[in-house]
Length: 91
Image (cartoon, rainbow, N blue to C red; front, side, top):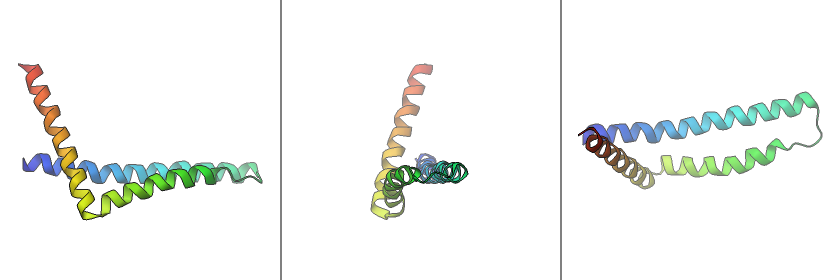
């Protein structure tokens, strides 16, 4: 059970950081494209703002202890169910 919990902790942490890296890469690329094209309209701000709200909620889920524990429990249950299904299939 301990290894499943550790794996769930790892996945929850990595999920947030992958989300953050993707956000920074995409929004940075869009801002750079906007600068290169010298557009007066800064449309990338809509993407940054909308996606930023989702990223903020993901950060709250990752850093508030009660929410993080609930998320880790949910991920651990999902890992257990998948491993049980894999065992049944292999028999």
